[in-house]
Image 1 (cartoon, rainbow, N blue to C red):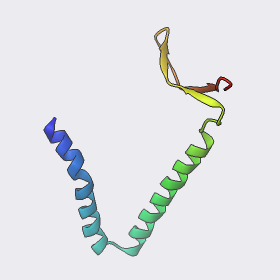
Image 2 (image 1 turned 45 degrees about the horizontal axis):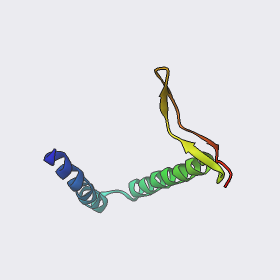
Image 3 (image 1 turned 45 degrees about the vertical axis):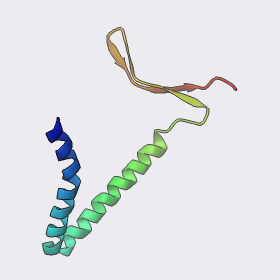
Length: 81
């Protein structure tokens, strides 16, 4: 278990170092492509958050098992206050 924790800790630093080394030798098109890909990921995440959110008057019911099948999570109207 200690090796997994160490790997999870070190991975971001190793990726940053690899990015710095690659960026020093990379073509400008590669850097712009990477920035474009990150922009698409950010926009997609924001779109997903806006389209799949619950209304303020809804309460989230987590996924659960019914009759051996997984029922995905959903929103139900919250009880009045």
